[in-house]
Length: 309
Image (cartoon, rainbow, N blue to C red; front, side, top):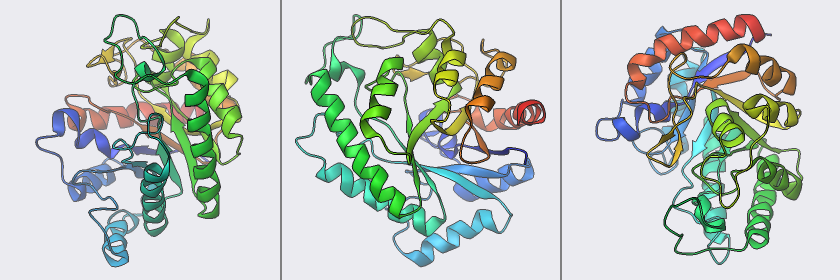
């Protein structure tokens, strides 16, 4: 079965679009017209989210927007950024927000939820010449907190039939290749997997961007990381990388052809690594002209599906 293509709707609501987000119905209509198989929902702002849609009837109505067009929703990027996963005294607030989003996923027919470590990499130590973090946590303590919380998340999400995927990236703590495997080992649950984003993989494994202390990269960069993650990838995000950071925070997400990634080198490793579902998701996060770039990105990924999907 060929891969299905979705795109993250957050590209049209945050960053350059924060002051004038694209209404959700308009997004669905455009994606349908471009032949997308579905969307990946940024569950915050003016787009559908658990706080905006509080009743099952409201949620069913919005779910019908894509299902009536024979489109799917490949996952939820949950708004957990107000939570402190590492520096909070306990995880009660984080878990309450996570559970709220799990319930939302169930009502919306979404079976994958995205998480990240929510806090800057500086909480684990000095990052280059950046200002020191206000609060630092010893590495082993931070690792224990993250793994114990996500172990709980994975168990509860399993009961709901929802897979948890962690998106590692330069903007958040535990952004070294070895960190990824320590967290995977610490959570130790088959329902907790990695969201492999090609631009984040390049910046983490190829450039060591925003890593505390000594930089850690892999000789084969993003490709080698995909190879090492075989059997552990629970969602694939595809976009180019130009080797820079957006606002010195997270990876720049340039449209295909505006970066340096060799997808003919990268895609065989991604395909061989496997994934429990058949979605490939385009991510234009923070790109200034994401709305206009969407059509060309879809055509590019159509080509990748023909060759590798």
